[in-house]
Length: 431
Image (cartoon, rainbow, N blue to C red; front, side, top):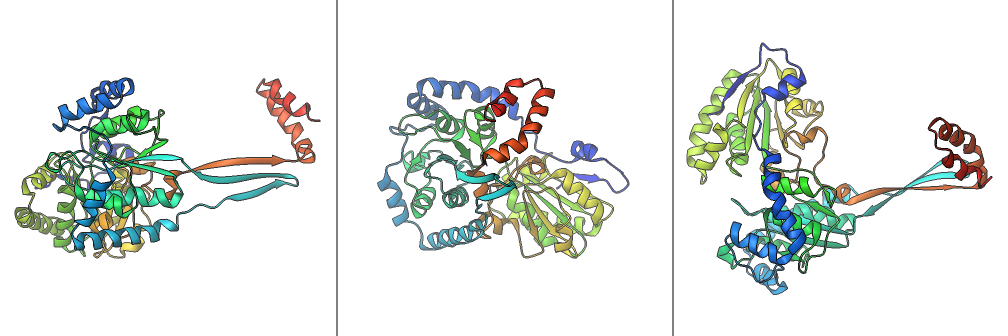
């Protein structure tokens, strides 16, 4: 089922590996071309443009962008007790983990009388996007809202696609999750139009300072296009998993985990990296059995057989580490002997799941970690959503006269070599 890439006898550079390894062929630049006129229309015409775009793309007529508060309260009141308990536990665990990510102001005395402090301040207003296409993601409400609240963001707005079967509202589970978290500003707007609404403001929605949350290629394209008008967390696109496994791994676990992420979307990426041919054969056998038993078998089979998924044979675990670092997976599972030790040598991953009892789906819902993570190799340079996403570090400089006099010769020398004499004059004027 998985395409095979045999790298056992190949000594490849990171550059070569990036070219060879399977990767979703999403053309964000092409999607930018598609969403640019939509975003420009929303910039000019605001709410009316959003209504028309929503009617055309989502086939839903909405009379008001914002969801009334009573709809969220009703969604929470009718939520299944089991789902409510699961969401409450997910919120509690996420808060426990994210509380430890809070930053504290620090002050450094550079010289006597001269200090530089770093103050951490939250952005004022954030737009949180929650997808709602092939699946429903109340868990993404938790992952977006909890770190923003703990960072101290004063104003939070959530947007999620309207659903025809719910009268144009987002899915009730999403509304209920918002109600549980005390978020009362929710908009029935999806896709690129939601990102443009957040960036420019429209109707009752004021512009935000930062947009976070995952989405499809059009959401990703809109975030790329709006970067600069508004801050973004990262280009978090279609999900991906890589599993680094040796012959100690249980093929049932490996197959189940590859399937779990393929279930999200036909374009989802599932990659197995192993030095064991017997394990690979056993995983393939398990995939044949397990995929047929799943609810979304067609979607999963499309994802697993697509060019973005595959099995990579490597010479040994050390070789496998080179491969997974080059791939930089959103989710990376380590199912090897000494899994913790192997994981400690990984440099590039959105999140790492160690050992046989830490599947990615645990992180999706209830590990306490965040599941909004960089995709498409962006884990080489970007992190997942955290409290820090919503904070800005501000340097605060405070020197007295004596400390300024001590620095003056150095300022003058550097201003002279850079041919910026007014810089030096701003110091000598104080002497």
